[in-house]
Amino acid sequence: MGGDLVIYFSLSGETERVANIIASNYNATTIRVGTEDAGKRLLLARYFLRKLLNKPIVTIPKIYFPDYEKVYIGCPIWADSPAAPMTYFLKNTKLTEVELVPFVTHKTDSPHKALETLANLVRKQGGTVLSTHAFKKGIPKDMILGELEGKQFRPEKTGDVDLGKFKN
Ligand SMILES: Cc1cc2nc3c(=O)[nH]c(=O)nc-3n(C[C@H](O)[C@H](O)[C@H](O)COP(=O)(O)O)c2cc1C
Image 1 (spheres, rainbow, N blue to C red):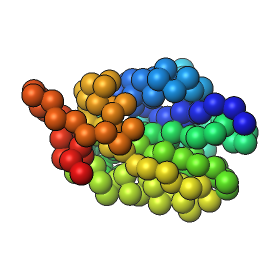
Image 2 (cartoon, protein in one colour; image 1 turned 30 degrees about the vertical axis):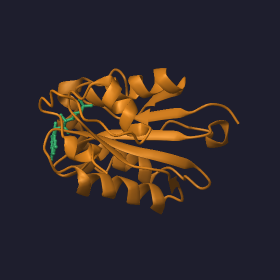
Image 3 (spheres, rainbow, N blue to C red; image 1 turned 90 degrees about the vertical axis):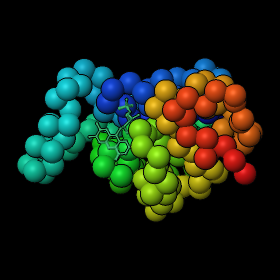
C-alpha cells in the first residue's frame, strides 16, 4: 500500500486549491477529473450539450485503488448537488474496499445536502466513508487542515468563513 490520493473536479480553481493543500500536507498524489485542456468557460455548456447527446461527459481516469491508503475526493457544489462531472465520474467508478474522505467546496451556508449526496454516491459505489467535509470558498489552509484532523477552530476574525462546521 502506498500513500494517499486526492481525486477532484474543479471548474474555477477553488477545489483545486483545496486539493493541492491536502495533497501537499499528506504527501498525496492528485488526479483531476475532467480534461485539463477543456476550455473552462465552455465546460458547463459542453457538459449539458453532451448530456443531451448522451455522449461521455468527462474522461474517466483509470485508477488502481489498492495502490492508495486513503482517497480524498472533492468537487464544487452546483445547484445544491455535487458538480455533475464528479457525479458522472463516481457513477462510472467502482470503489469496493476503498476508504474515502469526500469533500465539497461551496459559497452558500448550506452545503450539507450536497455533501451527503456525494457521500452516498461514494457508498453506493462500494466505498467506505471515513469523514465528510465542506470548505467554504476562501477558507484558509490551517482551517482546512484542522477540519480534516477534527480540530476545533475559534479564530478571532471570522471573516466570511462558515464556523458552524467547527463547533462540536
Ligand atoms: C453552476 C454553478 C452552480 C453553483 N451552485 C452552488 C450552490 O448551489 N451552492 C453553493 O454553495 N455554491 C454554488 N456554486 C459555487 C461553487 O460551488 C463554489 O464557488 C466552488 O468553490 C467553486 O469551485 P471550483 O472553483 O473548484 O469550481 C455554484 C457554482 C457554479 C459554477
